[in-house]
Image (cartoon, rainbow over the protein chains, first blue to last red):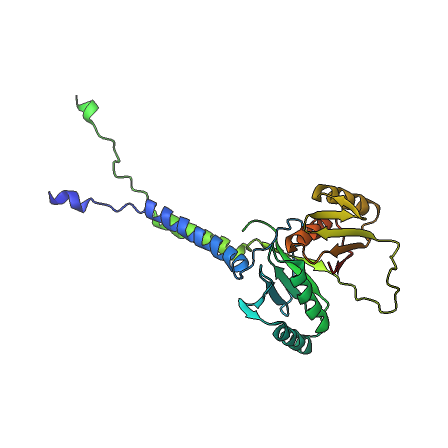
Length: 136
Length: 137
């Protein structure tokens, strides 16, 4: 009877297979989520848009959600606050500070225009629209 | 018969898995560290011309391709166009002069996605000189 148990080898292969699958799954999803899911904005697709090789660390990212509210890092701010933030950005890092506007697919242009006008008022001229290159 | 009952000579040929797992883990970590995640976000440059206070109101710059972005579609030089038609028109412009300025006039009530689509088509055709103007209606 006892001899049976001494021979019982644990087969590691399926466990390793599963762990590998999990590691790969988490690595891939984490990398994508950090990019696409960090805002409340569903961005439009622009598969032909240029790839940004070097990211400017000064970049200010402004989200404009579907109903036109302005958000920075998921916090809704007023137009006055945005102007203050952009003014500070200009003072600390210069007029060429890039502003990336992440507008929702269905945001009316009116709201985007307001943000662009505030950028202009703050003296920042380097404006870009963020879009998705591929489905995340 | 003894012959048929004979077992294989090396029944317990165990494969040592540990070194293989070590190597595979090393490879996996190497690839995870070295691969750069695909950049799913692209940035489309826009240039907004500042209004010139001295310019006459109804002055039209001569050498411009005008693209209109509206809630229900596009126009190219005031002629209605589908996205496919806009793409063709921009390709034609780019084949003549890729440095040609495209003036994109955007209706205030149009969706932002419409404008991004227009900018996407410009980027597709290699047109870099874009100016985005917001219309008041």
